[in-house]
Image (cartoon, rainbow, N blue to C red; front, side):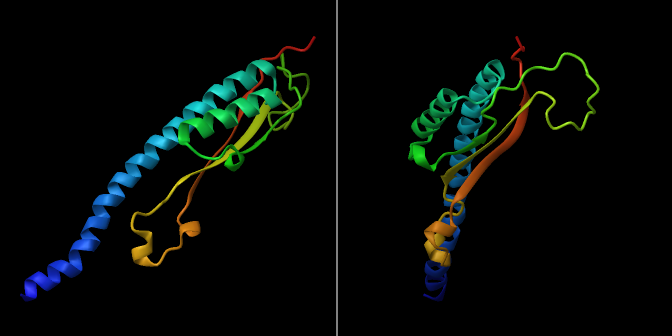
Length: 144
């Protein structure tokens, strides 16, 4: 009887480990889909020279559709003025912040971090994974 009571006490904790593995796999797949959406938008921005409103709205709706979240939850901070490709150095240094780069930062709530969070007393708003892609790419737009 003592072993049965110990099993009843330990079994829920062991099940959380199984659920955690599944949750990690789901989050990994969602992050992969998010990265693919950001990559497509980045390539469009390279051609346009910046993240235009159309590219941002397309990215926001694509992410919302793929991850099944509210489009307003997607945060996009990006270069919105055209940046032109640099042909040569023209006297600027390698540390020049205006060297033809398009900067972008996209943050998206992906899902819960921990399975069985209530069991451990973790609130739902604290158990949220926000994935952020913060990078830059080189513009391919040529100046007229």
